[in-house]
Every structure is written in structure tokens, then in C-alpha cells.
Length: 154
Image: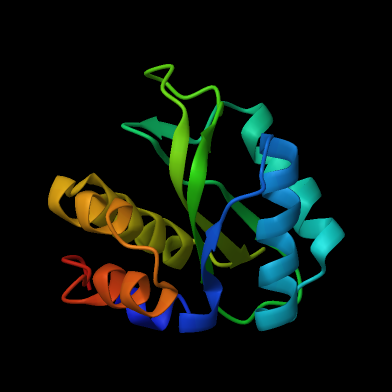
């Protein structure tokens, strides 16, 4: 599995107007809806439901919200670099500025977990995060995210 198969270049955005986790979920769902055809309101509800189980803010300014939704044939992603970090209830209490949202088919099983592990490994790389934070061009951000990021577990 490769990160480039999960996220379209158009799904990478620099966002400057978000003030809350709720608004972030809505914007992630709107982008996913327009690019991947999923139902935006179902996606928001699923993200909020997953978040109620525990925060998906993993620390170091990174959040990995994810949800299972209908009308998808494969796992897909949306990435936002926030110009202004927001409170996310992260494990380390730090605000979040890098958000990689994943949406998986309801019955995706292990593929969802493989995709989440791949994204998690990628976002734990401090060099990649530094490059993401230093860049405001969505095309460059997509290239940074996808260059050489592949799954170790085939």
C-alpha cells in the first residue's frame, strides 16, 4: 500500500479559517464528499462518533481523524495543514496543525488498519512534519506526503 493511492493531490489543502474540531470535521467531510463521492453528513457523524471513543490527536501537533462510511470502494484520505493550530484534545495537550483524515468503507477490515498504520508512520517522521509545516503549496505538500511512504506490511 502506498500513500499516493490513498490521497489525491486535490485532497491536500492549506486551511486558515478553522476554529474548532467540529468545523474541521465538516471541512474534511466536504472535501472527501466532493473528491471521493461519500455522503458528507454521514462522514461528519462517523468522525464525531469515532472521536467520542477517544481523541485522534496523537501528539506533536498531529491529528489522524478516521471513520468508516458507506458509498466508498476503498480507503481514501484528506490532508489539511492548518495555518492556525486548533485545540483538539490531543494526548499531549498541544494544539493541532497537521490533520490527515481517513475514510474507509464500512466493511474495509484490515485495509483500514493498514492505511491508518501507514499514515501514522508517515506522520511520526519528524523530518516529514517539519517539511509539511515549512510549506504552503498544496502540490508540494502532496509530494512530501507521498514520496517514498509505503507500507511495510503488504
